[in-house]
Length: 337
Image (cartoon, rainbow, N blue to C red; front, side, top):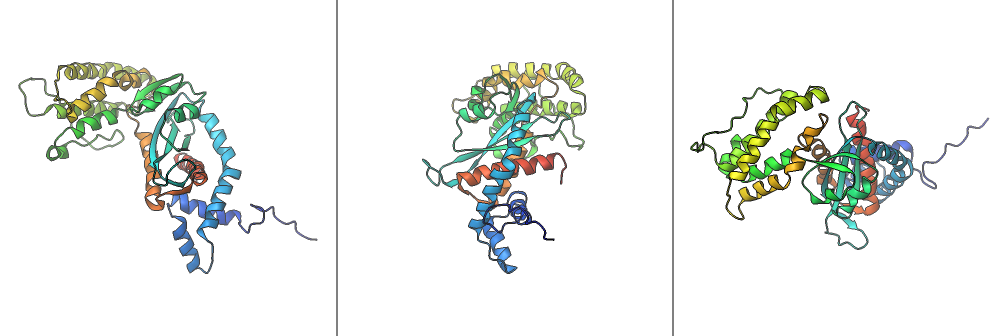
């Protein structure tokens, strides 16, 4: 008897499933660039050029993992709430673009609603609004994002703007020497902290206007921390009870300000007022978050890897990375090994 020959992973290639999985894991999960993997394998007596590793990675991502990615995309579009963010990347060889031009890795993820988490990365050569519009075609629900105007092109969604971005504008308006006492409250932290206070007396000059804006934001985050473990409907009711009044005070206070033209405070005030409706849209659904930090954390996961590998050689490589980051980060989020 003669055992049957195993089906080749790639035609005319010695690549084994284990070898490709090893390369993909170290490139995507561990952030180890191909040149360092090449050097490590050489020390073990294996001559495997980085170009070969890149070709294996791209081929297998497209052939074996992209169908899974497509299915995850289909399921994501059926969710009620999606978080979106983006971070920059560089692609050396792409038609119509210079090697040093900026491209983007977009991130989309489902809300933590008790269902399996879905996290998708999407490579695009530009930042235009047509890219999220195309990716989210067929989605109808609430889109949690920053204040980027391109999201206005996405159809059939309610935009939910991130309070952390608004808070950052006020933080940047505070002189550097006064910033140390103003840290962002972590909603998931168990650290005991006093409730932020907001001066009510107009003659109280202990805080400058930018710091008062920070105090309002911190107060809302403080309340959110108290409500984070409630069921969605109860959280929605408690938000109406406790946060609506804070927002009303905040908007009234903003309208009383006359910041200097071109100042950082004016930018903060304009940002808040221009996004007044979308900043408050999280109040419509108890499942929504007050910030988009979930998507920003996923952007950071890619940014950590980017710091090591610096760039993608080709658009195909960037697209393959988007697929594999999606698979691996989704597995991590669902505690799959």
